[in-house]
Amino acid sequence: MATLNGTCGLITGVANKRSIAWAIAKALARDGARLALTYQGERLLDNVQELAAELDRPLLLPCDVTSDIQIAEVFQTIEREFGGLDFMLHGTAFAPREELSRPFVETSREGFRVALDVSAYSLIAMSRGAAPLMAARGGGAIVTLTYLGSDRVFPNYNVMGVAKAALEASVRYLADSLGPQNIRVNAISAGPIKTLAASGISGFGGILQVYRDRAPLRRNTELEEVGETGRFLLGPESSGITGEVLMVDSGYHVMGL
Ligand code: NAD
Image (cartoon, rainbow, N blue to C red; front, side, top):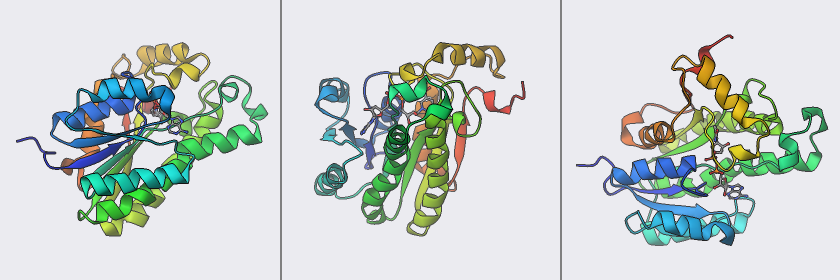
């Protein structure tokens, strides 16, 4: 029997079939979970609808994570339709394109604010909405997606690296804040993968090549590998793990040179 039969989860961050959130959604659905997917705006609805046709009775909900009203509506609908929530994948990030190409010292106040709001604060806001629905089920699991640029400097990753540092610190504080309700909070730090968000980072192809050349496994990370790790961290097999940043990057992070 599939291990996630009878569970319900929320997935944010699906833009198209290359989205890491979609790879995780597919792995969870394969194991029997019922899913709600959010989409950022009408522009992405067609894409998400087309993908969701592969799922069993999906819920599709609009949610721009900068809107507290839309976040509240998502959890109201989930409570009504699912009666609770077992897990949530937070796969949302954004920085204005110009912040990902000019020298970091030129980062604007507004670019910083937007990047941190969409990419880090949204995890806190979404977790606050999810927590009561998870507590009603006796606990739950939350996973977000991060990158090694939180800790080390990568060309043009810039303010997104600062946002990921805030995101990873938020994972640890949320793990402590929600742990007493048996809610776990973890992050997956994925190696670079060619997605819509990645295409905004100037020189991204060069980063992919360095990983292929130097990572212990001498290859790039596959979407499916992150998908399976997401399923693990959102499912019962990882019941003892919280506050963790799990690297899924062909081992690149262990290298000195
Ligand atoms: P993606 O473009 O498929 O996903 C990014 C998602 O963020 C999109 O679905 C987009 O709609 C959503 N989003 C942006 N602004 C939003 C807003 N205001 N409200 C709601 N949603 C919003 O790209 P991806 O690479 O799959 O990114 C998913 C996550 O994985 C991001 O956090 C990214 O930083 C992280 N990540 C990506 C890589 C990589 O190399 N692709 C590596 C490590 C971590």
